[in-house]
Image (cartoon, rainbow, N blue to C red; front, side):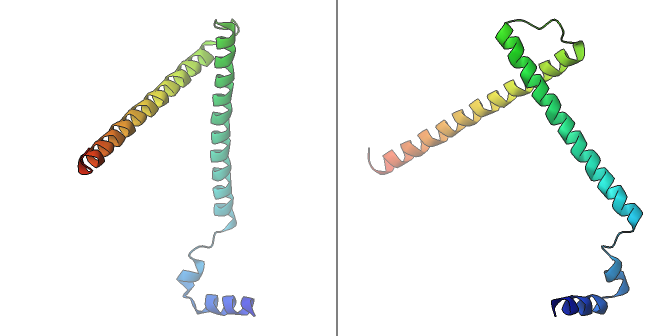
Length: 115
Protein backbone atom coordinates (compact mmCIF):
# COMPACT_ATOMS: atom_id res chain seq x y z
CA UNK A 1 0.00 0.00 0.00
CA UNK A 2 2.78 2.44 0.94
CA UNK A 3 4.72 1.62 -2.22
CA UNK A 4 1.68 2.36 -4.37
CA UNK A 5 1.24 5.75 -2.70
CA UNK A 6 4.88 6.66 -3.33
CA UNK A 7 4.67 5.53 -6.97
CA UNK A 8 1.45 7.41 -7.64
CA UNK A 9 2.87 10.55 -6.03
CA UNK A 10 6.02 10.16 -8.15
CA UNK A 11 4.00 9.74 -11.36
CA UNK A 12 2.05 12.93 -10.61
CA UNK A 13 5.27 14.96 -10.63
CA UNK A 14 6.39 16.66 -13.81
CA UNK A 15 9.12 14.95 -15.79
CA UNK A 16 11.59 17.61 -14.70
CA UNK A 17 10.76 17.03 -11.03
CA UNK A 18 11.00 13.26 -11.49
CA UNK A 19 14.50 13.42 -12.90
CA UNK A 20 15.68 16.24 -10.63
CA UNK A 21 17.60 14.05 -8.20
CA UNK A 22 18.26 11.11 -10.46
CA UNK A 23 21.85 10.40 -11.40
CA UNK A 24 23.18 8.44 -14.26
CA UNK A 25 25.73 5.78 -13.43
CA UNK A 26 28.71 7.90 -14.47
CA UNK A 27 27.80 10.88 -12.30
CA UNK A 28 26.95 8.56 -9.40
CA UNK A 29 30.37 6.92 -9.64
CA UNK A 30 32.08 10.31 -9.90
CA UNK A 31 30.30 11.41 -6.72
CA UNK A 32 31.31 8.24 -4.89
CA UNK A 33 34.93 8.60 -6.08
CA UNK A 34 35.03 12.21 -4.94
CA UNK A 35 33.62 11.30 -1.52
CA UNK A 36 36.15 8.48 -1.24
CA UNK A 37 38.99 10.82 -2.13
CA UNK A 38 37.83 13.34 0.46
CA UNK A 39 37.65 10.63 3.12
CA UNK A 40 41.11 9.40 2.13
CA UNK A 41 42.52 12.92 2.39
CA UNK A 42 40.96 13.39 5.83
CA UNK A 43 42.32 10.03 6.99
CA UNK A 44 45.81 10.85 5.71
CA UNK A 45 45.74 14.19 7.52
CA UNK A 46 44.57 12.49 10.70
CA UNK A 47 47.29 9.83 10.40
CA UNK A 48 49.95 12.51 9.84
CA UNK A 49 48.70 14.41 12.89
CA UNK A 50 48.91 11.26 15.00
CA UNK A 51 52.40 10.48 13.69
CA UNK A 52 53.56 13.99 14.56
CA UNK A 53 51.99 13.77 18.01
CA UNK A 54 53.81 10.48 18.59
CA UNK A 55 57.07 12.00 17.32
CA UNK A 56 56.60 15.03 19.56
CA UNK A 57 56.21 12.82 22.63
CA UNK A 58 59.20 10.73 21.59
CA UNK A 59 61.31 13.89 21.37
CA UNK A 60 60.00 15.15 24.70
CA UNK A 61 60.73 11.80 26.32
CA UNK A 62 64.26 11.68 24.91
CA UNK A 63 64.76 15.43 25.58
CA UNK A 64 66.26 15.78 22.10
CA UNK A 65 65.37 15.54 18.43
CA UNK A 66 65.64 11.95 17.24
CA UNK A 67 68.39 11.52 14.63
CA UNK A 68 66.25 9.62 12.13
CA UNK A 69 63.72 12.45 11.77
CA UNK A 70 63.74 14.03 8.30
CA UNK A 71 63.33 17.68 7.44
CA UNK A 72 59.73 17.22 6.23
CA UNK A 73 58.77 15.64 9.53
CA UNK A 74 60.52 18.40 11.47
CA UNK A 75 58.58 21.02 9.50
CA UNK A 76 55.32 19.18 10.12
CA UNK A 77 56.20 18.82 13.81
CA UNK A 78 56.98 22.53 14.04
CA UNK A 79 53.66 23.41 12.41
CA UNK A 80 51.78 21.10 14.76
CA UNK A 81 53.48 22.56 17.83
CA UNK A 82 52.58 26.07 16.61
CA UNK A 83 48.95 25.01 16.14
CA UNK A 84 48.85 23.50 19.64
CA UNK A 85 50.31 26.68 21.12
CA UNK A 86 47.73 28.82 19.31
CA UNK A 87 44.95 26.57 20.61
CA UNK A 88 46.32 26.89 24.16
CA UNK A 89 46.48 30.69 23.80
CA UNK A 90 42.86 30.76 22.54
CA UNK A 91 41.71 28.70 25.52
CA UNK A 92 43.59 30.95 27.96
CA UNK A 93 42.04 34.05 26.37
CA UNK A 94 38.57 32.50 26.46
CA UNK A 95 39.01 31.53 30.10
CA UNK A 96 40.21 35.02 31.01
CA UNK A 97 37.33 36.61 29.11
CA UNK A 98 34.84 34.34 30.88
CA UNK A 99 36.36 35.25 34.26
CA UNK A 100 36.04 38.96 33.47
CA UNK A 101 32.39 38.50 32.49
CA UNK A 102 31.68 36.47 35.63
CA UNK A 103 33.39 39.07 37.86
CA UNK A 104 31.40 41.88 36.25
CA UNK A 105 28.18 39.94 36.71
CA UNK A 106 29.01 39.31 40.37
CA UNK A 107 29.79 43.01 40.89
CA UNK A 108 26.51 44.07 39.26
CA UNK A 109 24.52 41.59 41.34
CA UNK A 110 26.38 42.67 44.48
CA UNK A 111 25.60 46.36 43.81
CA UNK A 112 21.96 45.58 43.16
CA UNK A 113 21.74 43.70 46.45
CA UNK A 114 23.44 46.61 48.25
CA UNK A 115 26.67 44.84 49.03
